[in-house]
Image (cartoon, rainbow, N blue to C red; front, side, top):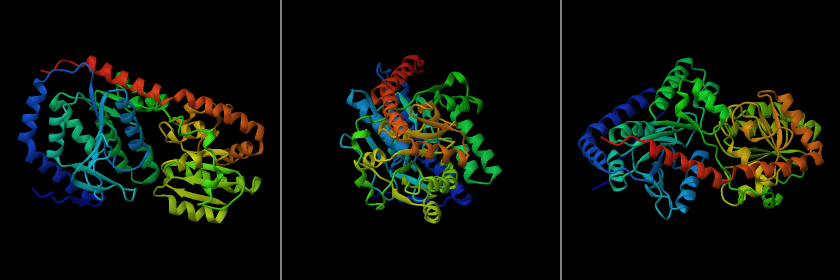
Length: 437
C-alpha cells in the first residue's frame, strides 16, 4: 500500500484549525481499531517490571530534550530495562529506527505544523494506525510524555483508554518563554490554561529542579503529583582533560580567554542581558572573546549585534567529540537565563572544569554553588553579569580553584545516579497502579 501524503500546515490560526480537523478525522477513521486494542490491553496481566516508552513532539531533532531522552533509554537498556523512545519522523526524514537496536523509533506523520518561533522545527501528529500497531506489538505499562504538544495530547487520550499510566516530564517553561517572545496576552492566557489542563491529565508530573517544582505546584498542579528528578551529565565525555583550544580555530582565529554561552540561541535565554554586559567585559578585558555554541531563532540578530560591540565566535550546533573540546577550552560560562528549569549546559560546563555565572532564577542556581563552583547573580542585570565575568577573568587563582570545585560538583550528578532514581520512580509507579478492570 502506498504511503499517505503528509499534510503540512503553517503556524497560523487557519493552520491550527486545519490541524484540529485533520486529527479529528484520523480518530474517526481508526476508532474501531483503537477499541479492539483497548480490549486487548484491559485483559492482559500487569508486568512486575514496567515496560516504559518515552513519547514526545519534535523528538526527531537534536536538542536537550531529545538528547537526554535518548541517553536515558540507552543507559537503562544497558541495565536490561524495557524502555524505548518514540517520536514522529520529521517531514524531511524517513520514518523508522534511529538506533541499531530499534529502541529509538520515529513513526510516520499524518499531519505536521511548523513550530512558531523555531524555524525548521515542527509539531507532528503521527499516523494513528502506526501508533496502534506499535502498541499492539509492544504492550507498555507506562508512557512518559516528553513535551506537551499534539503527540502528547494523543497520549493523554490513549492512557486512560488503554489503562496505561501517563507521566508528564515537564522541563520547559513554555509560559515564561512565550511571555518573552510574544506580546499577545490572549495567547498567553490560552497557553496557561492549556498547560495547566494538560499537566493535570497525567498520573505524575516530573520536574528537574526544586524551584520549578514549586512553580508547577503554584501553577495549579497537586503537590502529591509533582516529583523532582534531576538529570545527570556524561562525566567521561565532559571533562577538563578534553580542553583543546585549536578546536575553536574553525570559528575565529583569536587569542585571549573565551567566555562561553552554551545552549539554544533564543531571547528567553537572557541573551539581551549578555549583549548589554559585553561592552563592559570587553572594556576591562579587550582580549576576551565570546564563544557561542548553539543555534536558534535569535542567532542571526545576535551575530549582527555582536559584530558591532566586540569579538565573538559562533560555532552553531555542535555534536560529537568536538563539543567537549570547545566547552573545556573556555574560561567562564556566562549563562544569564532566568527561565531554565534545570540547566544541562551549566552542568556540562562544570563537568568540563568551567566555572559558571548563573542567575538566581530557575534550576541553574541549584546546580552552581555560589563562590565555589561559580557565581550566582540577580537576573536581568547586565552590570552585575559584567562585573562577575570580569572578576573571574581577572582572578586566575580564584578561577582555577572554582574550576576544580566545578568538576567535583558535577560528579554529584552522575548518570548512574540519575538513571537509578528514574527507574525506581517507574517501578514505584508500576507497583502502585490499580489492577485493570
